[in-house]
Amino acid sequence: MLERRRTARRRVCLAGHARVATFMPEIACAVRDVSLDGARIRVPPVAALPERFDLVIPSRGETRRASVAWRAGDLIGLTFEPAPAAEAAHRPSPPIPSHVPEVARPRTAPMAGTVAESDSVH
Image: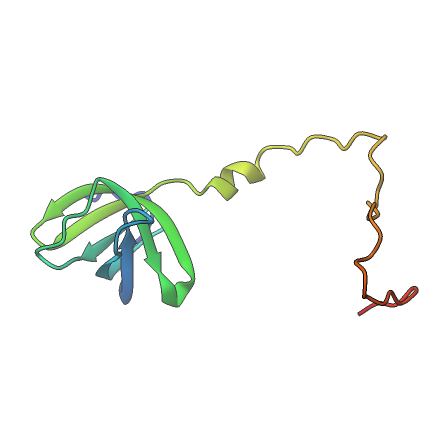
């Protein structure tokens, strides 16, 4: 069998769910294999997943944008899209103009009925 993965996969058995859209219910799935580039999930036979969705793995605190690479019955192979944070990390941030103050102070007085303590930190 020809191995086409760029990164090693690891067998796992994790609960997950596919988040298709904010207004639709999430679809429960079992994550069976995972790598840096993708995953293999098992979904109920009646589940209809679109070509792109968010895969959420709560035990890892991870949410990844995924695209379907292949389907075989109730198994679906996924490829992960690059994380936006990883792309942004390589972009330099713009310089802060010298006229911008370091600390912004409130411009309004405290609300009526509140007591302001001078120079106290909570």
